[in-house]
Amino acid sequence: MLFLAVTAGFFVENQREHFIEHKREKQFIISMVKEMETDTIQLHKIMRDSIRIKGISDLLNVIYSGDGKTIDVREAYYLVFKHAMGVKFMNFSSNTLTQLKNAGNMRLIRDRNAVDSFNTMDNWIKQIERQQNNVLEGIFDASNYSTMIFNAKYLREDGQLKSVEKIHEDSVTPVLMTNDPDILITYANKLNIQAGRLTLYHTSLEDYDKFATRLISYLKKEYNIK
View 1 (tube, rainbow, N blue to C red):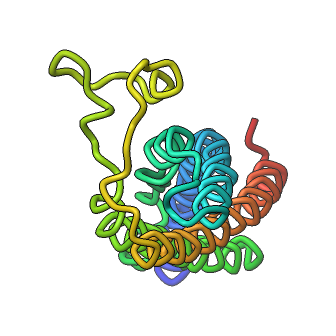
View 2: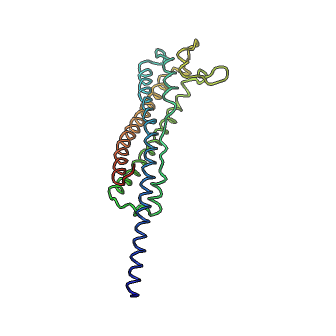
View 3: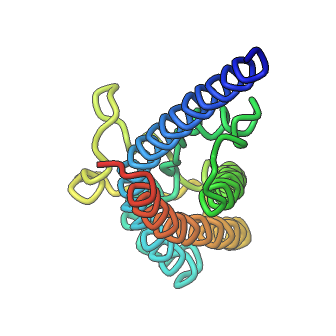
Protein backbone atom coordinates (compact mmCIF):
# COMPACT_ATOMS: atom_id res chain seq x y z
CA MET A 1 0.00 0.00 0.00
CA LEU A 2 2.83 2.34 0.86
CA PHE A 3 4.46 1.65 -2.53
CA LEU A 4 1.21 2.38 -4.34
CA ALA A 5 0.73 5.58 -2.39
CA VAL A 6 4.28 6.77 -3.18
CA THR A 7 3.87 5.83 -6.84
CA ALA A 8 0.54 7.62 -7.07
CA GLY A 9 1.98 10.66 -5.36
CA PHE A 10 4.89 10.71 -7.78
CA PHE A 11 2.51 10.38 -10.73
CA VAL A 12 0.32 13.23 -9.50
CA GLU A 13 3.34 15.46 -8.89
CA ASN A 14 4.72 14.62 -12.31
CA GLN A 15 1.40 15.46 -13.94
CA ARG A 16 1.25 18.72 -12.01
CA GLU A 17 4.74 19.69 -13.24
CA HIS A 18 3.75 18.88 -16.81
CA PHE A 19 0.63 20.99 -16.45
CA ILE A 20 2.65 23.93 -15.11
CA GLU A 21 5.26 23.61 -17.86
CA HIS A 22 2.60 23.43 -20.59
CA LYS A 23 0.93 26.49 -19.13
CA ARG A 24 4.26 28.37 -19.13
CA GLU A 25 4.88 27.24 -22.70
CA LYS A 26 1.55 28.71 -23.81
CA GLN A 27 2.32 31.94 -21.95
CA PHE A 28 5.68 32.24 -23.70
CA ILE A 29 4.08 31.64 -27.10
CA ILE A 30 1.35 34.22 -26.43
CA SER A 31 3.98 36.78 -25.38
CA MET A 32 6.08 35.96 -28.44
CA VAL A 33 3.10 36.46 -30.77
CA LYS A 34 2.22 39.80 -29.14
CA GLU A 35 5.79 41.06 -29.47
CA MET A 36 6.01 39.94 -33.09
CA GLU A 37 2.72 41.64 -33.91
CA THR A 38 4.00 44.84 -32.28
CA ASP A 39 7.21 44.56 -34.30
CA THR A 40 5.22 44.00 -37.50
CA ILE A 41 3.35 47.28 -37.01
CA GLN A 42 6.64 49.11 -36.46
CA LEU A 43 8.23 47.24 -39.36
CA HIS A 44 5.63 48.45 -41.84
CA LYS A 45 6.26 52.06 -40.77
CA ILE A 46 10.02 51.62 -41.18
CA MET A 47 9.61 49.98 -44.59
CA ARG A 48 7.83 53.10 -45.87
CA ASP A 49 11.12 54.93 -45.28
CA SER A 50 12.50 53.06 -48.30
CA ILE A 51 11.44 56.14 -50.30
CA ARG A 52 14.72 57.52 -48.98
CA ILE A 53 16.57 55.19 -51.39
CA LYS A 54 14.89 56.83 -54.38
CA GLY A 55 15.73 60.27 -52.95
CA ILE A 56 19.41 59.39 -52.63
CA SER A 57 19.40 57.98 -56.16
CA ASP A 58 17.95 61.26 -57.43
CA LEU A 59 20.63 63.17 -55.52
CA LEU A 60 23.33 61.03 -57.11
CA ASN A 61 21.93 61.82 -60.55
CA VAL A 62 21.97 65.54 -59.75
CA ILE A 63 25.62 65.47 -58.59
CA TYR A 64 26.95 63.12 -61.29
CA SER A 65 25.18 65.12 -64.01
CA GLY A 66 27.26 68.26 -63.49
CA ASP A 67 30.74 69.51 -62.71
CA GLY A 68 29.82 71.51 -59.61
CA LYS A 69 28.90 74.60 -61.59
CA THR A 70 26.04 73.27 -63.69
CA ILE A 71 24.15 71.08 -61.20
CA ASP A 72 20.72 72.00 -59.88
CA VAL A 73 21.88 73.36 -56.52
CA ARG A 74 18.43 74.01 -55.08
CA GLU A 75 17.33 70.44 -55.85
CA ALA A 76 20.59 69.06 -54.46
CA TYR A 77 20.01 70.93 -51.17
CA TYR A 78 16.45 69.64 -50.97
CA LEU A 79 17.42 66.02 -51.63
CA VAL A 80 20.41 65.93 -49.28
CA PHE A 81 18.51 67.33 -46.31
CA LYS A 82 15.32 65.40 -47.10
CA HIS A 83 16.82 61.96 -47.71
CA ALA A 84 20.56 61.67 -47.06
CA MET A 85 20.90 62.91 -43.48
CA GLY A 86 18.77 60.41 -41.57
CA VAL A 87 17.19 56.99 -41.45
CA LYS A 88 14.50 55.12 -39.51
CA PHE A 89 15.57 51.98 -37.67
CA MET A 90 13.79 49.01 -36.12
CA ASN A 91 13.75 48.57 -32.36
CA PHE A 92 12.84 44.92 -31.93
CA SER A 93 10.73 43.67 -29.01
CA SER A 94 12.86 40.71 -27.96
CA ASN A 95 12.16 40.32 -24.24
CA THR A 96 10.42 36.96 -24.65
CA LEU A 97 13.03 35.64 -27.07
CA THR A 98 15.76 36.64 -24.61
CA GLN A 99 13.98 34.84 -21.77
CA LEU A 100 13.67 31.70 -23.87
CA LYS A 101 17.34 31.77 -24.83
CA ASN A 102 19.07 32.86 -21.63
CA ALA A 103 17.05 31.20 -18.87
CA GLY A 104 16.90 27.70 -20.36
CA ASN A 105 13.22 28.12 -21.10
CA MET A 106 13.50 26.99 -24.73
CA ARG A 107 13.14 23.43 -23.43
CA LEU A 108 9.53 24.25 -22.56
CA ILE A 109 8.66 24.69 -26.25
CA ARG A 110 7.59 21.24 -27.42
CA ASP A 111 6.99 22.22 -31.04
CA ARG A 112 10.37 21.76 -32.76
CA ASN A 113 9.28 23.86 -35.73
CA ALA A 114 8.62 26.73 -33.34
CA VAL A 115 12.03 26.28 -31.69
CA ASP A 116 13.77 26.26 -35.08
CA SER A 117 11.81 29.35 -36.11
CA PHE A 118 12.76 31.21 -32.92
CA ASN A 119 16.42 30.47 -33.58
CA THR A 120 16.00 31.68 -37.15
CA MET A 121 14.27 34.82 -35.88
CA ASP A 122 17.17 35.47 -33.51
CA ASN A 123 19.59 35.27 -36.45
CA TRP A 124 17.38 37.56 -38.53
CA ILE A 125 17.29 40.21 -35.81
CA LYS A 126 21.07 40.09 -35.34
CA GLN A 127 21.60 40.44 -39.09
CA ILE A 128 19.23 43.40 -39.38
CA GLU A 129 20.85 45.12 -36.40
CA ARG A 130 24.28 44.69 -38.03
CA GLN A 131 22.90 46.19 -41.22
CA GLN A 132 21.50 49.12 -39.25
CA ASN A 133 24.99 49.79 -37.87
CA ASN A 134 26.41 49.61 -41.40
CA VAL A 135 23.83 52.10 -42.66
CA LEU A 136 24.61 54.45 -39.79
CA GLU A 137 28.34 54.20 -40.53
CA GLY A 138 27.60 55.09 -44.15
CA ILE A 139 25.62 58.17 -43.12
CA PHE A 140 28.41 59.39 -40.84
CA ASP A 141 31.05 58.71 -43.50
CA ALA A 142 29.15 60.62 -46.19
CA SER A 143 28.28 63.47 -43.81
CA ASN A 144 32.00 64.24 -43.38
CA TYR A 145 31.88 65.43 -46.99
CA SER A 146 28.34 66.81 -47.08
CA THR A 147 29.27 69.37 -44.40
CA MET A 148 31.99 70.66 -46.74
CA ILE A 149 29.47 71.07 -49.57
CA PHE A 150 26.09 72.06 -48.14
CA ASN A 151 25.54 75.00 -45.79
CA ALA A 152 22.92 74.25 -43.14
CA LYS A 153 22.13 77.97 -42.78
CA TYR A 154 19.70 77.56 -45.68
CA LEU A 155 17.61 75.36 -43.39
CA ARG A 156 17.18 78.13 -40.83
CA GLU A 157 14.86 81.09 -40.76
CA ASP A 158 14.68 83.68 -38.00
CA GLY A 159 16.90 81.50 -35.85
CA GLN A 160 14.64 78.44 -36.23
CA LEU A 161 14.77 75.31 -38.35
CA LYS A 162 12.41 75.51 -41.28
CA SER A 163 10.76 72.82 -43.37
CA VAL A 164 12.99 71.22 -45.99
CA GLU A 165 10.22 71.77 -48.53
CA LYS A 166 10.71 75.54 -48.16
CA ILE A 167 14.05 75.26 -49.94
CA HIS A 168 12.07 75.05 -53.17
CA GLU A 169 10.04 78.14 -52.25
CA ASP A 170 12.76 80.33 -50.74
CA SER A 171 13.57 83.50 -52.67
CA VAL A 172 17.23 83.04 -51.70
CA THR A 173 18.98 80.52 -53.94
CA PRO A 174 21.28 78.27 -51.89
CA VAL A 175 24.95 78.11 -52.83
CA LEU A 176 27.38 75.22 -52.55
CA MET A 177 30.28 75.77 -50.16
CA THR A 178 32.64 74.24 -52.73
CA ASN A 179 32.51 73.44 -56.43
CA ASP A 180 35.56 71.18 -56.24
CA PRO A 181 34.60 68.25 -58.51
CA ASP A 182 36.80 65.84 -56.54
CA ILE A 183 34.98 66.59 -53.29
CA LEU A 184 31.58 66.41 -55.00
CA ILE A 185 32.33 63.09 -56.70
CA THR A 186 33.85 61.62 -53.54
CA TYR A 187 30.70 62.58 -51.67
CA ALA A 188 28.54 61.04 -54.40
CA ASN A 189 30.60 57.84 -54.28
CA LYS A 190 30.10 57.60 -50.53
CA LEU A 191 26.39 58.27 -51.03
CA ASN A 192 26.34 55.41 -53.51
CA ILE A 193 27.70 53.07 -50.83
CA GLN A 194 25.15 54.44 -48.35
CA ALA A 195 22.33 53.76 -50.82
CA GLY A 196 23.56 50.20 -51.36
CA ARG A 197 23.61 49.49 -47.64
CA LEU A 198 20.18 51.05 -47.22
CA THR A 199 18.80 48.93 -50.07
CA LEU A 200 20.19 45.75 -48.51
CA TYR A 201 18.73 46.76 -45.15
CA HIS A 202 15.25 47.30 -46.56
CA THR A 203 15.42 44.06 -48.53
CA SER A 204 16.13 42.26 -45.26
CA LEU A 205 13.20 44.04 -43.60
CA GLU A 206 10.87 42.88 -46.38
CA ASP A 207 12.10 39.28 -46.09
CA TYR A 208 11.81 39.35 -42.29
CA ASP A 209 8.28 40.72 -42.56
CA LYS A 210 7.25 37.71 -44.67
CA PHE A 211 8.95 35.32 -42.25
CA ALA A 212 7.34 36.93 -39.18
CA THR A 213 3.88 36.97 -40.77
CA ARG A 214 4.10 33.24 -41.54
CA LEU A 215 5.40 32.44 -38.05
CA ILE A 216 2.64 34.41 -36.30
CA SER A 217 0.03 32.55 -38.33
CA TYR A 218 1.65 29.19 -37.55
CA LEU A 219 1.90 29.81 -33.81
CA LYS A 220 -1.69 31.01 -33.56
CA LYS A 221 -2.89 27.90 -35.31
CA GLU A 222 -0.71 25.39 -33.43
CA TYR A 223 -1.34 26.89 -30.00
CA ASN A 224 -4.97 27.89 -30.59
CA ILE A 225 -4.36 31.58 -29.98
CA LYS A 226 -7.17 33.95 -30.93
